[in-house]
Amino acid sequence: MPTTRARNGIVRPSIRATEAAANAFVIRKIDTIHKSPAQLFSKKAQPGASLSDFTEEKTDGVAKEHLGEGSDQASLLSRIRAAISYTRKTDSPLSCSHFTLPTSPMSPDHEALQLLRSAHASDIATFVCGSDNFETYALAVKPIYQARLYQGGGSSDAQWWMGMSRAQQRAGPGASGAQIKRAEALLKEKDRKRMENDRKGVGRSVQQGRKLEKALAIQETREGQRGDGGGLEK
Image (cartoon, one colour):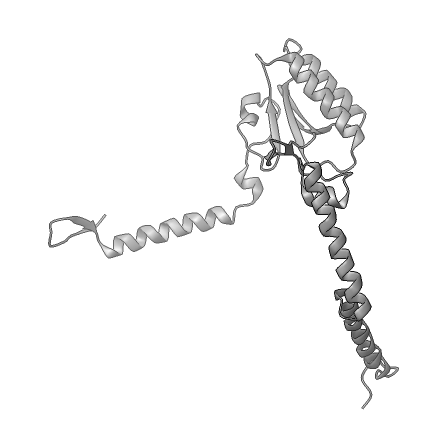
């Protein structure tokens, strides 16, 4: 690479060499951006492919269970049965898991593979891909929400508010009886003020109703000005 020597004796690449290197980097970056997903993830489940060839790939947004020799078979079967049970119960799963198992009858996970094949035959599990050496199936799994700690040491998931009253929801998860009563009093006061404002004609719902009536009147006026041809009359 051509270089230039500064006054302090430090050898630096010339401006032309720096520009050439930058252009080469941009070209490589653009080439990567314009590659299709098939080009970026070129590994396929071809006959004769090994289990390790496939398990090196990454899939965004999907938790993978790469389980082979040395895994706890009882725990694996338990997870698969739990996923099958959850898949049967839900129509809109929020997450799924991929189970990749070797197809060898001598594998310690062969019973789990047979369970997945049976679930696939019953339209419960989804066959993702496979070869002579491994098969991959997808099952819906119950999402694991990250616990959020609150005052009082309680925890909750993303649907903690299900089945609770307005006061309980306002007080939050793990709220004490006194906190719920305060929240209930605040909600009653808000309802009273809203009803009072509506009676006086200054409430939010009254103002929204007036705006809707005005918009409807403008729309009806414009529609009345249209002729049979769909255009405005002159």
